[in-house]
Image 1 (cartoon, rainbow, N blue to C red):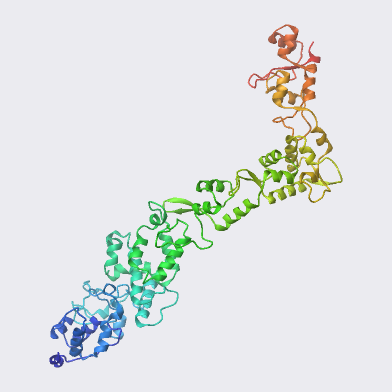
Image 2 (cartoon, helix red, strand yellow):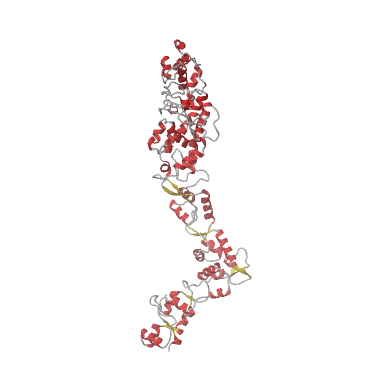
Length: 590
């Protein structure tokens, strides 16, 4: 190699540790008038791509460079071969105008912008349109002879400039800009960005999908939009990753859960970005999936961790926490006992629950008392307590989780029931018949009175009772209601059977005044309400057409014609469509 020292008219050392090795060879070749750097390699009988110690010693002997500084330049900052662009080199025109040497940063495939000038790098000649090559006359001259310094650079997107600045700082051993992913070196940053850039190209048919892009070294024009889409993951940590995951898992793929929502991307990530080199990425991914509402990671998955406190729970988690079957959860949601939020996961809809709501429901169920205990607190029988619940006057839990099937009442519901009775009171009384006394005379009178009090039709009086007295014993009812509750009454069917008429006739007889009902608001026609005394007095005052015709030995039709001719009108007019026959007052009949 010493014999070649005099062959080079110009010899120079590398411009700095960040100069490109291939660019250094091209610079020395252009200084000595070579057509391209291959002329220099042939002169020293050197291999084109080899960078072993023997090769570097030959280059140092030929160019007069210090072997140690040349080894630093040839090391390319420890970047692997797949992170460097070796076939289609790139240049920054503003940088070459100021300092005529090629930076090794431009040879990195994830860097398509200059961190200093914020412009896109050139990788093709603006005159002939052919890609740049190391086989050209000079650093700023294309093989076609065009001066590359005459090109007008284009402004690069902020994401591209940010990626270039992070990689440049890691190459130089300085602190990268704050807020980015905690990558350990430039090679990790390049691999991280390029993985997500390939994910951005997964739906691009003309690029061949994720695998093709991940293995290729794309031109600047094709790589720039992909790197820009991937830049938030590197520059905005962990928000960029969270947004990428939310976008990826928010579609409607076929299937459900993690695999259906994310497709092959998470599996590719585990295979391409190993946890040993990217522990921060795997940790953040597990934490995000643990809070993800679209599904649940299986316990045997490498992405599984226990769900953190406060994370949304699935229906299976809610069922396990409440001690019920999974099929019981929809019924609890429908009864408004368990709040739920419906979210889309994969191609299906899921209900998600909060652990606080599950804990609150468990506490409510544990504090609820049985219907028997609630009846004792109210001063009624268990059957009357259940009828009060069915009437909507007292809220109850039916078959609550973790308890024996049955009706349970919360203490707060009993308190609220008493508060509504207080609101229906118009004053105070020292004594008088109470609601508890009314309860002892029949459930119909009690429930009807409570409903009338809730609607403002009956005014109650507050009694002075000891604090431990039953709830209904603390309220007095009007004396007329208490007296009416003791009257003998009959149901509609019992009255119809006693009068030998159809049950449809009883409401018509009541409406015409032929029969009377109890004065208590709880005595409705659907229950025991018709006064037995009015039923007993009915045959002496009224008669149906059939009864009256039989007593006079004629037909019903003849009887009706004779009475109408005499000007007698029935108390209840006949209505065949409703099944009603005519009823006459005996005193009106001649």
